[in-house]
Structures are given as C-alpha cells and as structure tokens.
Length: 387
Image (cartoon, rainbow, N blue to C red; front, side):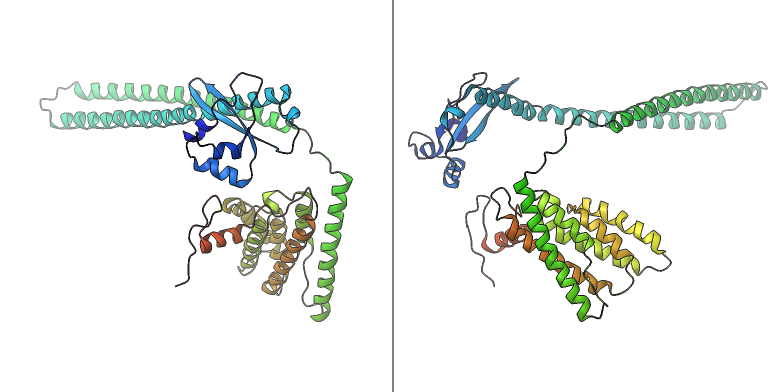
C-alpha cells in the first residue's frame, strides 16, 4: 500500500501522457511513508520511473515502468511511447484480473465433477439396496400363486429387452461422441500441421557472426588438440568425443541466453544422459540397435522432468549407448571437454557488449546464499560459521 501511494498521481489510466519521477527523490522524500521495496530500488540504481494505474472491472493496480536515465526526455515523453505504455498497462492488468475468475472456474468444475460423482454413487447404492430388498421379499414371501413363474419370466424378458435397448442407445451415443471427438482432433491436427503465423527468427549481424566464429574456432581448436594429445598418449585407446560438443558450442555462441545453453543444464544433463546410457549397456540381451533408441527415449523426457533440458545430451546418450569399452573413463574425458567449452564460452562471449554468458551461476549462487546467508535483495544478513 505504501509503495502504491509513493507512485500516486504519476500516471492515469486512459491518458496519453506520463510523468517521470526520480526514484531516489521519492525514496528520500520525508513526506512519503517509508517503503522497503522503494528503498531497495533506489539502492539498486533505478533512476527514472512512472506509474500507470489500471481498473479492469474493479480489479485495480499500478503498472510501473522504469526509464533509461541517460535517455532523451523528449523521446520518453513521446505520445507514441505514452500510448504504448498506457495500452500495455491495460493489457497486463487484464491478464492479472483474469487469474481470479480462472481459479473460480476451475474450482467450480472440480466441485461439479465431485457432485456428479456423488449423485451417481447415491443412485447406484439405491439401486443395489432396492434389488436386495426385492430379492429378500421374493425369497421370504409365502402363498405363491401358480401364475408367479410366468410373471417372473415375463418380467425378466421385459427387463432384458429394456436393458438391451438402453445398451444399443448408449452404444450409439458413445459411437457418435467418439466420431465427433476424432473429427475435432483431426481438424485441430490439420490446423497445427499447416503451421502458425509466427515469423522467422532475425538474422545475426556480421559483427555477431564474427564473435560466433571466433568463439567456435577457438573452442574446437583447443578440443581437437586435446583429443589428439589423449589419443597419442593412450595409443588410441581413449579419445574425446567431439560431436556433442559441436552442438554445445552452437548453443553457447548462438543462443547465449537460452536456458538450454547454461552451464547448469550442460553439466547436469550430460551427467544424467551418459550415466543412463552406460547403465543400459550393463543390461544383458539388449541389442545395440535398440539400446541406441532406448537411451534417448529415457534421457530426453527425463531431462524435461528434471528441468535440465539440453539438446547435446540427447546426442551423448546415443553415442555412449553404443560405445563398447572404457565408458566411465570416456565419460570423465568428455565431461572435462564440456568444462573447457564452458570456460571458453564465458571468456569469449562476455568480451562482446551485446552478449552475456552465463545468465547466472546457479550452483555458485546457491552455495553463496547457503554459506553467506543473502536475502532476496542480495544483502548479507547472517554469515554462517562452520561448527
């Protein structure tokens, strides 16, 4: 609430003008209530900001936009930019406002399904108990007339005919539903096959292509030389598998910000894939041609489940599943090659002003938080000492 009051009056929904404020001035303003988040933004280096309110059927909020402090104020206040920010605020507000109705609809559907099942269970129990009562009555009733066997026979035939007609009707309805579902599925499949309206990815500039060339040629020169050294020293008994590393460098220098390119995914996914492939080679009576299909079939969805998707690991699973000897040693050599590609990618990519690799050091940051005790704002709270 304090944070929203600090931005009050900066922008208004539906207006095509915005007022930029200095974050540090707001944080130091004695007339404003103290707000920890605003103080953290000021310390983090945010300078200019504007707020645009939105009201979507009673769902109200404020959309904060941070501006480049070194940018031209005339460009920041351009009507086209102001109109864009106002429309973006309404769009984001609508997306936030729809979350509660979606949750209510899902809860309603869940409750409706539960109630339907509850009613069905009650009906089934009622039928079962009624049948039990009728059976008990027939077994214990006296003075049976001579016409009773005939009546029972007619009743049984009528019930059988009714059940048969009901079964045919239900089967017909089920067949129609299956037919309609298959038709809808085929229609959706056909639309997907024709493709969507998304455009193609933009091409790299020549400068960025040059950076990629320098990074790839440097990395693979080092790897090829190490491979030659290993083969020479081991009398060609061991070698460094280079094919998956080519896929890895493609990610590192062309998709530097992609999650699949990051060191965490590269290391964990390769360890997981190669371990699965080698373990499969110990299972007897699995032909190599099927093992090379089974290994990626286990590894690829496994990476998705573990959150470590890394395409080169799929190639490693195939290569190591067909390798005959020295798998664990070759695995160690290969992981050393992965480490080398990461080190070179970090060094070369970050020389470019438009690249950053990696986006984060997951393991290092996690260990730092565990040892030093940082909070979400990066501030040191407690230094944990070893016992």
